[in-house]
Image 1 (cartoon, helix red, strand yellow):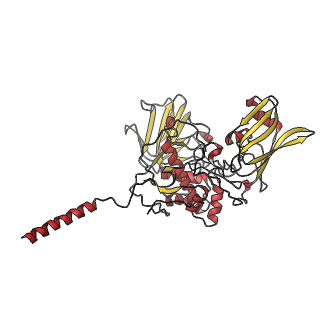
Image 2 (cartoon, helix red, strand yellow; image 1 turned 45 degrees about the vertical axis):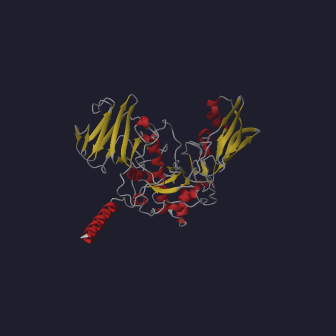
Image 3 (cartoon, rainbow, N blue to C red; image 1 turned 90 degrees about the vertical axis):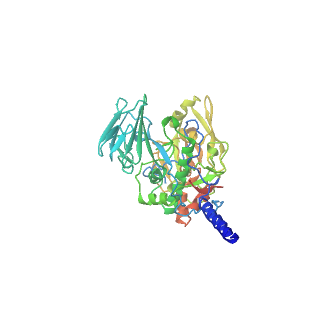
Length: 464
């Protein structure tokens, strides 16, 4: 009898042990190396963030050593890890007006590409129906909002009141329109991964090397996640806008090659000290990158100067030159009220070689410019031919191509008639060079190796 009871007790213990083991979580581990998509985030005051990059004015609005430490036992291959059970992160995108010139639309005309509801189902629109809105429209609720929910989010909405480089754009996901005294704010709400499929081809030519497109996908995802967590445009009901102020979105439609690049790196982001990095990128380097000291006195540890050497020496923007007349420069500096220009003195360059402090000497005073963007803005080459090393010229520039330059006066009969600038690279020079990434990919580097080349002390981690 004792043996029988002993066997019954052992059997009960075995069954209890199996039941306990079955309740132990599986392979997904929460650690500091994973980005929690639903963590509380710090809201910051709305302001203009430095753009992650700048567009190439010649193309289609596109831009063209430490090893990465990866989470233990985490597969960072092209599948992006097993995150099928992770809820998709959404992003709210402010759609700007024609030519990205403003935020408030005077009116909006759109086509519903599938059956659509609004006002919690109280209002409905048929597939193919056109909606025209202005500030007097009676479709807005008591809070001045109209939220359009399509039956098929993949079909989305076609906005016929604006054009982008592709022509009339269609936006997947949902639309929210907010009325105010200044006009209408148009917000596109969609999944982060779908958003990226319209960002990557708008930021990097879809014909670029596959691994470069993957690197761009991870940069764009990381930058977007950082903006979502920062709450970058709270007063505009958005996380980002669709212009170069953040990342260009849906200027170019989805492409097969860029869709595949986004899918193959799904959910992967770059982190440093447990936080997503601000993954700046730009078009072309002049042989070196800079830290974000060009904007901030306290550079981030992951943004270090990288000597790219002659990696991009075949690129047209690797070297360039332009001459600005003294009359034009006097017009540019008139706002400083220092009289006519007498001299230009470069006071300081970044570790990477970009001019980040410069003195303008005038007949009635002096003015010191102490930011890369301001310097490039004052020496804007808009409408003035800039010559590139391949012999081509362009006048389609709002800023000087880069702050990597030297400046010498031009004399005629002992009078300064202008200044000649010789420079290199295109863009702010911080983070990943897109053309550099393409050359590295052509040399056989993987997207992980490309990212570790331009960003230091980072972890590659999935959003979970």
